[in-house]
Length: 152
Image 1: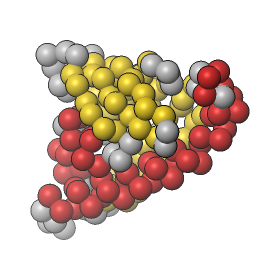
Image 2 (image 1 turned 180 degrees about the horizontal axis):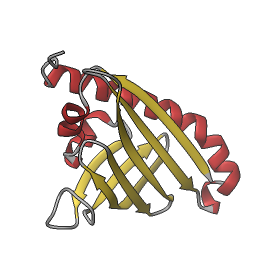
Image 3 (image 1 turned 180 degrees about the vertical axis):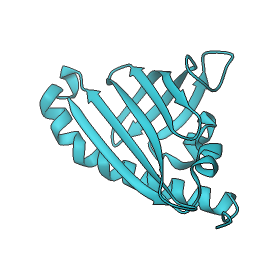
């Protein structure tokens, strides 16, 4: 099992960050490893929303089916995913004074034997952390470019 946690401070309020990340289809704009998202439910937000996500990490191409398991506006989005790699993850938004938000991304993943099982997960942890840190830098740039600077 691989547990990965990354975070970044975004110079916007939690509601401004949430206004961007709550659009699940926008995740392909800032996640370099997410190539496509296809919704499997009529709803595209909130608990129970299901979607397929085509993911590419190095030579591995996977399609995970994700279900939103928690949804707290301006605070948290949790998912459970099944596919070759299974697990659960969450985005959490924590206010840091006026106009700043700590955005955290935590995932706990289980790798199949053909991807090395526990050994593969151990090897993948620093690679995934590096990819996701880069993703968060892209998210920060997107949110800060799209949302006005908050009033202090």
